[in-house]
Length: 78
Image 1 (cartoon, one colour):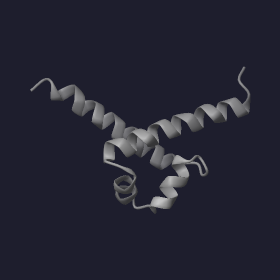
Image 2 (cartoon, one colour; image 1 turned 90 degrees about the horizontal axis):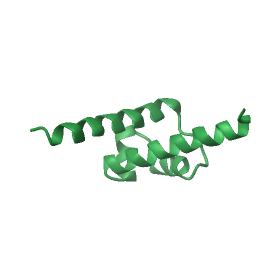
Image 3 (cartoon, helix red, strand yellow; image 1 turned 180 degrees about the horizontal axis):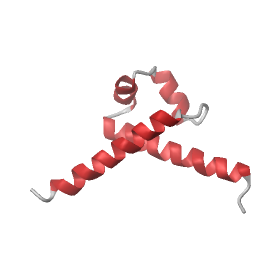
């Protein structure tokens, strides 16, 4: 059974992966910070792993990824 520390590392990795994908989808750190209404420095602290990304923004990142996936799926079907 994984330890609590190991579980936290996996969660942090998932948050960072989603956040990095959201940065890419949005067109960069400045664009994502603006879209989310947060200071670029705060976004940077999330990307550096210094501060944990709030759950609501993790979910927003996942939604961006899902929407982009839908866009990719339908792009070839037109």
